[in-house]
Length: 147
Image (cartoon, rainbow, N blue to C red):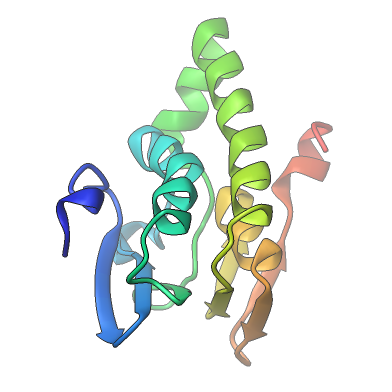
């Protein structure tokens, strides 16, 4: 993997075929819950992908039985406790939507198991979303009154 992606240590990246970059949510022990650092990286990676001439398509999936369980409890607790974290995460959420929608490279999501929160955003904003039989689309934001 090129140095372009070295800073994305919270995501597992590989190239399963020429021109294809695969992004895997790879925390199966937490159903691929999104940590604070992973949330920031998910917001930014799309810019680097768009600038990478070696990437012709992106595949996003989850390791294990889940696509992504959404924000992990540490992230949620910090959002509740610290207004600065809350506002930063909101900006990242905005950037995630903007950057994936405006990515010049086609994005395909392979949704297995639950897809919640930031994982749901990535899964459904892909250009092509493929949901397996185990896929569960869950938007916890509506229950919390923030969507």
